[in-house]
Amino acid sequence: MLERIARTMYRRRRLVLVAWIALLIGTFTLSNAIGGAFHTEFKLPGTESQAVFDLLQKSSFRDRQVQAQIVFKADHGVNDAAVEQAMKKLFGEIKSQIPNVTIVSPYSQAGARQIGASNPDIAYAELNFADRSNEQFADDGQTIKDLGSTIHVPGLEVEFGGDMFATNPINGGTEAIGILAAMIILLLAFGSVLAMGLPIGTALFGIGTGIAIVLMMRNFLDMPDFTTAAVAMVGIGVGIDYALFIVTRYRENLAAGLDPERSVVRSIDTAGRAVLFAGSTVVISVLGLWLMKTSIMRGVSIAIAIALVLLRPPARPVAETGTEHERERGALAQPSAQPA
Image (cartoon, rainbow, N blue to C red; front, side, top):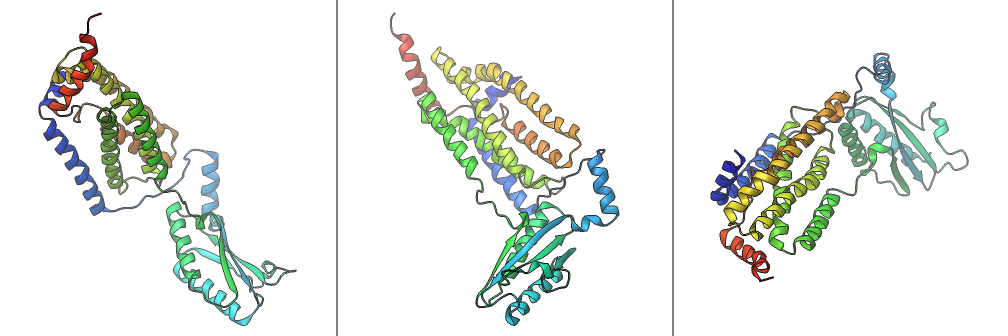
């Protein structure tokens, strides 16, 4: 069966390449049209920790689960009339725009201790948020920072403390570094840009299509915001590794004197068969994360499994054009043609 598929893919390699490009563009277009957002919900059903969380939520104690601070410093003291008016206005806007949040103001009796005793130029307000998803916390944090940026009082500085206000300066840079490192290693190993580009290209096609499908599935499954990073991480390693096996076997077949079509067919029937089995094993292993009963990992396991399925052979153009094959075959076969 693999021989038949490999032979068909080789003879229609240009059509296969166009189909892969169309699939990649089509899935991304569809995912953008559908939209959706990641949702992180951490639950441990059947555990003592989850029982405690449920009890606290039933007793309304979880309204104070997450805390943050608004710290401000005023040159003329935090009790200055203009400063107090601006900060009270900020606290009011936060309450009106963000649901389920309580604010302990330093200007209230309960928050009087939040004004520096030895330095009355500094004070802070305590924010207590009810439980919500990580993405909602990030959105609320950005909303509060936007409201704080509208305050313009001479000598007043406002800062925000808490995980919900943290920002991640790295966005996709690590994956790009990994791909660049893989390109350098493959180029040194193969000594050919063409041979290096095939594993990288198949990995990027599989990762891109997988991420597009994940972006669509997040509308139906709870997936944390690091799901695409996990897909890219696994896809780069596994995709390049699998393609490397097949490309290496293909070059060996060319060096042994086989023509390009027979080299492709034999590569898929040998190395491709091993990759198919290994990929299926990894898919089953990743789906085993469902047994953890941790909601945050179920969406991640499905996303990684989708990427692995798309990275397995032979549904991709394994071979390049015939003339390029002939040149490579001639270069590889030449040493073996010399007399001993």
